[in-house]
Structure formats: C-alpha cells, structure tokens
Image (cartoon, rainbow, N blue to C red):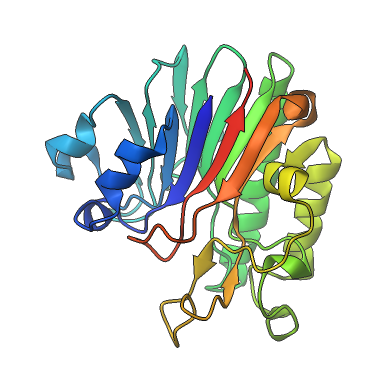
Length: 256
C-alpha cells in the first residue's frame, strides 16, 4: 500500500500549478492525505471532488473560512472516515481525518502552528495531547499510521539552522520533547527508520530569501506508524522536486 502526505498550502491554488495532477497520476498512490487545503467542498472544482481513480473526503474549518482544512484521496473505500477529534475544543479548525483500512487506522493531521503567540502555542500542545490520547484509544483495536504536518522539527538534523531557531515555535524544547515522548509511546518515524540519520532532508522551505533553492529547510511533515506495524515498512521517502507548495510530498510504502 503506497501512501503520500502533502501540505498543499491551498488545494485550489496547488491544483492550478503544473505539478499537481501529474503528481497524482504518476505517484501510484493508494491514498494521498492533504493538509492546509483552505477550502470547503462547495468551493472546489469537480476534478478535486471526484479525482480520477479516487474517492475524496474533506474536513474544513468551522471557525474560519479559507483556513486550515484536510482531505484524503483514497482508491479504496475506507470502512469508516471520522472527521476531527471527539473533543469539541479541538474539532473546529478542520485539522483531522481518520480513515479506517483493514490493516490500520490512518490519521491525517494538520497540527496547529504555535508561532502566533503563547495562547496558540498552548493550544498546539493541548492538541498534541488530545490527538495522542485518541490515537492510543484506537490503537487498541488495530495499528495506527499518522501522517501530516506536525509543525515541529524533532531533532537538529531535521532543520538547516537549528541554533538560530532554538527560540522559535516549531523547534522549541517543549515541542521537541513532545515529539520524543510521542515516539516513546511506541510510534516509529518511518523516514528515519528507512533512511537513518541523513542530513539535508527537508519538507518545508520559507518562500523568502531563496530558501528552497538553497535547501534551507525544515523536516516537519512525517509518517509515523505504531511500532507493531513497523515490520511492514517497505520504504519511506521525501520528494523535494515536486513543487506547487512551500511543502513537498512525503511517501510511505507498507507491505499490508
């Protein structure tokens, strides 16, 4: 089973660029999870509502139109698709879809950004905890795959300039510690499991100062699998040459 995750920074804008539909056609993906779609289904053209060969599922922000949002394009019809966390405090911003497949639950998550102020950082940390509690609950039934934009680089090798960003949300000690504790609960970073401690592998680059051309980036988009599924990882990778967004797609192949 071949899965992709991609923060498209506006799915309508991304779909107008030359890489988007060719990527879908050539990817061989069974499931593509999108984050930051910034659209409601009623705003989307037909080719995004009924993408060729896929079923589509969306969760949009109830709090603010054109903000956040996630989507899943799936060749197989999931047994169930849940929108958002069960706690209403974290269910208003269109940040999560949970699709149930025979071998696992797939969490597609656009985690909050904590850079605005202390309140948003606090919300981000509480969202992390609420997500993990729900993932652990579902994990009692079957393994879990988590993909999406975590908005945190875990280790120094996960961003180009760690020293300069030690006091920036996205690389704060509290955020990095949560990532460590998440892994400690039995979740495996698929890319690191396959590729090891390689450097220079990033998934997001600022639009400013030629960051992408110079590969001054951050690895903040991930696939994690619960450890009972780890032996099924066949491959995991990053596709930095796919444009359309300030993020690039990340991939996972499972032998399920």
